[in-house]
Length: 269
Length: 304
Image (cartoon, rainbow over all chains, first blue to last red; front, side, top):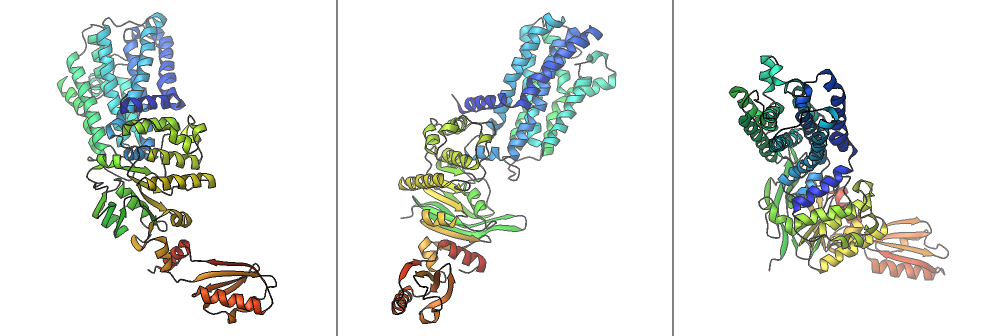
């Protein structure tokens, strides 16, 4: 077994003992899913068409944006990464192992949502399973990148939460989770293009449901992939082993570069 | 032949305006236990962390096993073992998992035998957060030595340990020394440094105040030997003037205590006096100045 696999397995076991993380990973997204299934489908039956991708993306956002930064900030401040450095753990593994771990949890939650939303709430099931899995995998990659980047650049858990909320809350409102993108006013549609969720929902529409999406599907995936890749590269470059020993090669403000693909998307759409 | 495993030459480290280490130089030979002593803020931890590759020097050169810690950190990891002052592991990780985790990165089979040896057999699967301070330190040591490093860095290794654990740790360190492991030990515990170290350096305000074997260092102090005598009838209570070479004298808990610059003549005179007074010796102790005495002398007076 490789060191990264051992590392991830131990992270996974640790996460199963972490009640706060389990709440964020399972109880919160599944509770919200049940609530939306019971209430929203009654108020707005059209929601059934996008319920599965919306709830899967919600689970991905909650787990990565809320669940990843906090342990990274806390571990750095507690000197845990410092120990890792001394014992020869590469910086990339320090970030990849927790990201892989939360993604394993996301797969479980996304599977529960995908398999039960149809029978329980009459949600529209994806017509193209491969397209659905592909968009989900790309979204997991992108949001994991953002989660670790926020953890790396944040000087404290509170700052991390603020950055996460800056992406999470607008995404909930304007990115097509609650209200379809096409129904938004033009200014809100522009704003929506700054958030990865918009591209993920657009990707689902075209690839998982075979419906004409608001904008180009392939471009959505490329922008999402570019955003994820850029976030990961920046996170590794800006990684600090501990609070006082600043070895990062870039200033934390460079983290904003991770938004560049979405700004490009804003200009192209 | 130069057999140095640790070479520190004119090493300097500053934090803003504060000079933590001011141009120190020393070498530690293969198989030697070298004690780095000094009060808080003397520069011990900065020196250790720079040698471990955690900090970048502002001046001078450092080499550990021939490796420059700032240039080849990856290679250094295979050569050194580090017991951290604060071991910093996730609260939920168990000792067995921690061993598996770090051994995976060292590409060796997990050394669970070390957990048994340091008395953590029953705590193998307990969460790190539930371990006592002593257990955490012992785990940190087991992790540090799992890959049989050529150079071992220890920062306050016995802080928080009980007597038995401390003795076990000392025996482990002596075994490692016999196997040619070089050990750099930073400690506040003078008795430990004196018992374990082949040589010690006392750091003061970022500089080496003195360096040598514990015997050499204690010998360079004021050199007064303490002679404590208890007699049956207390005949020495008022007899300080009659004892030669005594610099200082006091009477405490039935003991007459003399600080002598010539222990031979002092002891002979005491025995003759007790005999002449018709008294009898109950106890007579001769104690050389300890490393702690010398350390206090240096840190209080700042003298070499």
